[in-house]
Amino acid sequence: MTKPHIQSHVSLKLLNTFGVEAKAKFFCQIRHLDDIQNILQNPTFKDIPFLILGGGSNLLLTQDFEGLVLQMDIQGIEKIQETQDCVLLRFGAGVNWHSAVCYTIEKELGGLENLSLIPGTIGAAPIQNIGAYGVELKDVFESLEAIEIATGKCQTFTSSDCKFGYRNSIFKQELKGKFIITSVVLRLSKNPKFTISYGAIQSKLESYDQDISLKTISNAIIEIRQNKLPDPAKIGNSGSFFKNPTIPNTQFESLKNQFPSIIGYAVSESKTKIPAGWLIEQTGIKGKHFGNTGTYEKQALVLVNHGQATGKEILDFSKKVQRFVFEKFGIQLEREVNVI
Ligand code: FAD
Ligand code: EPU
Image (cartoon, rainbow, N blue to C red; front, side):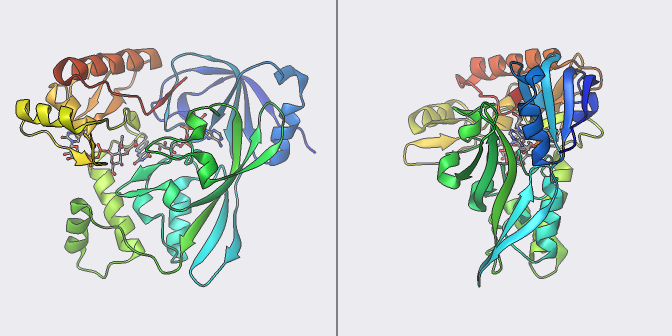
C-alpha cells in the first residue's frame, strides 16, 4: 500500500464555501480506502482530533484545526443491482453531489432531480439528510459504508440505522465525528414519479413549454436556486445557516394574531414549521451588512461573508441573528451549519 501524502499547516480558505481562513495542523487527501487504514494505523495520529472534509459547504471554521483534516476524494460510480423498477448505484464518498445528479439524469434514472445543484460531496449528504423542493436524501437512500475512527472497522448502515430526520441523522448526534463515510448506495427509479408540487417548480415548468422530464425538472430547480441563493464562488456562504423551526400550533396561532402575514406549514397534527428566512427578514436585517458579514439580499436565511470575514465574526453575527429573532418572536433558531 502506498503511503498517503500528509501535509502540515495547510490553509483551508479555498476548501470551505464561506471562504474563511483557518489552517489545518495536518492535512491529507483521501483517494482510497487504504489511505484511511494507513492513517489510522499511524501512531502520530493516534490521539489527535480528525476533521472529515467534503466540499466544505456546510461548515463554519472559527479557528485553526489542531488535528488532521481528511479531505474525501474517493471517486467512482458502480451499478450494484438492477431490477425491473430500479437501479442501485454505489458512489464513492468524494463524488461531487451535483455530478452524481447529472449522471443519474443522463441514465434516465429518477430520484435526485429535485436535489440538483446542492454543493458538496456524496459522502456528506447523509450527515444532514440533505433536502430541497420536497425530496430528501432518505427518499433514495439504500445504505452506506463507513469506517469507525476508533477501531478502523468498516460498518454498513441501513436507512433505519442512520435515523434520518429533517436536516439530521445519527452522524450529527450520537455518532458525531466517529465514522468516516466511504461510499453511499442510492436506489434510483426506472419509472420515476415526479415531485413538482412546489409552486415555483410548476411555474418554471410552464414557462419552458416542454414535456416534463427529469431534465426539465432539474433545469427548473437549477434556475430557481440560481435566482435566490448566492454562488459561493462569488460570495462566501454555507446555504441556510439555521433550520426552519417547528413550533406547537398554539404558539403559531398566537403569533398569527400578532403577525397576520406569518407563514407556516403543518408538519403534524400539533406542530407547524415556520420558514426561518421569513422570521429573520421580519427583524429588518435582510440584505444588510454587519461589518464583513450580513444576510443575503434575496434570502435572509443565508449568512454571507462579504470578503474579509473571519469564522468567529460570522459566528458572532449568527448569535445576534438568533437574539433578534428570539426577542421578536420568542423562537430559538437552531444552527444547521457545523461549527468547527
Ligand atoms: P462539508 O461541509 O465538507 O461537511 C459537512 C459535515 O459533514 C461536517 O461535519 C463534516 O465533518 C462531515 N462530513 C463530510 N464528509 C464526510 C464523510 N465522508 N464522512 C463523515 N463525515 C463527513 N443543503 C441541503 O440540505 N439542501 C440545500 O438545498 C442546500 N443548499 C445549499 C446551497 C448553498 C449555496 C450552499 C453553500 C450549501 C447548501 N446546502 C444545502 C448545504 C450543503 O451543501 C450540504 O449540507 C452538503 O451535503 C455538504 O456537503 P460537503 O461535502 O460540502 O460537506
Ligand atoms: N422567505 C422570506 N424571506 C426570506 C427567505 C424566505 O419571507 O428572506 C420565505 C419565502 O418567501 C417562502 C419561505 O420563506 O415563503 C421558504 O423559503 P424558501 O423556499 O427559499 O426555502 P427555505 O425554507 O428558506 C429550505 C431549505 C433549503 C432548500 C429550500 C428549498 C432549510 C433550512 N432550508 O429553505 O436548503 O434549498 O428549502 O426546498 O430547510 C440548505 O439547507 O442550505 C438549503 C438551502
